[in-house]
Image 1 (cartoon, rainbow, N blue to C red):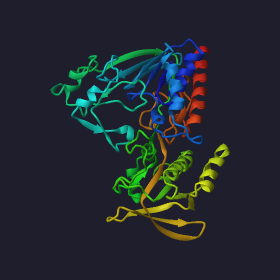
Image 2: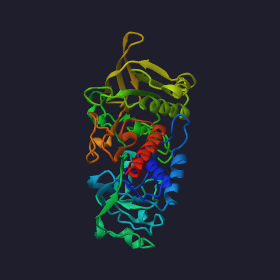
Image 3: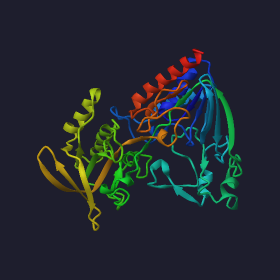
Image 4: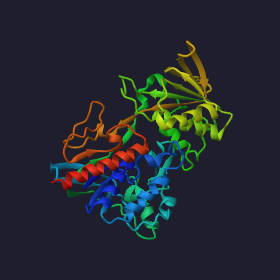
Length: 410
């Protein structure tokens, strides 16, 4: 069995298949660590617990199961065959750090080169040799050769006490024979630089929701403090702008379903750190159905958050203060508002990674989500539709069952 994507959906599918059968499972992930975007969360909703409380158990299940083979920094290059008999070529890119690494950190102390830290959405930097994050699995360093000075420097290799650094590592291609494939490649946040009317990419104090999540995390770029990027000050007036590029025929025509809840959670982050902060939530409608209704009411009633029904039309900036002015029609009051804020958080939607990295021979719908119409190839989690973590786990388990039935039915 091949599982493509090592986020929460891929991890779930891999462990469920391996524990429910005698099948060998190959888990392929393009990043240098497992966990996907869940690892970048500060807290899950609605319980507001950290992501490691769920990931840690799954990492242990992977580590203790010899039938699960993990390939990080790897990508599928070619798929041939049919249900029950696929031949898959996987390119495994070098880590430049071998399995003897103990993550002692001596290499980082001497490294002179820096790189943008994509784990924190480029809000800070790391050295060219780095640990992806404090909860990384595998817990080993990796070298970004785009930033590394190579053998002309070699300082990291010289100080490594276990000779783990190998700057001459080369990529390799492996061939796998599998009966079924689970495509769990997850999602990317929508490119907010396309939202010119909101000044994203131009105004420093306009950020998106994934950046806010890292900012609120204790291991994030601001050590858990919510600060304005322009001056490092704590904002007193914060606006959450919903459906930023979503439900919009010019951008993402669909609703990503979780953005309202993610913003409500982040509004609670703000109030937790500064109860006196003024938080305004601009929305078309609140999508917090079923068991999430209580979470919405908690934010509305207990945290004293202001809700304005209306889609923000334009954001401008005061160049002197870097404050933002939002122009929006308050549909409940029937008036145009122009309000200043210190910080604006755009709730951008979830764009399926399959849109740019589609599964071979498996069709996509008009929005780039996997259609489960190809025997032996099954989409899971956010590769199929936008879902929250709990639903992603459920759908990955279902994909694992379908894949096992596919193999056993032959």
